[in-house]
Image (cartoon, rainbow, N blue to C red; front, side):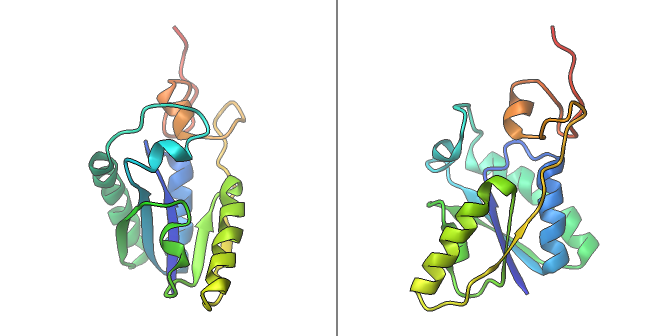
Length: 155
């Protein structure tokens, strides 16, 4: 089975790792990584996003370890548009987080218009930080939590 998922992944955290693990449970994985142009447009909160090349290098390191554990292969591709790679016919699954479920529904609309079978959209629940709020890259960048959801002490 071929699995698609996408994101900015800056920085990678335990919530992302949960997505990756679920994807590798299902099959071989293609990750769409937002381009430098697309990444700022996908943010709900304006913040700096590292370069595509830097994010790709970190993502590759993360994926290699999980792929090996599941004996799966992976590929990282540049995303230039939000619906990205998942509209291509070869995929069977799309792994998403709860807030991107609607994007999965839109992808399936596009797939139907193109004559492709719809994807099975697999929603992976958010991982919670120690304070009960979700683990997010934005919270990490703002210094609220670390990549594992541990609340960091304020100044």
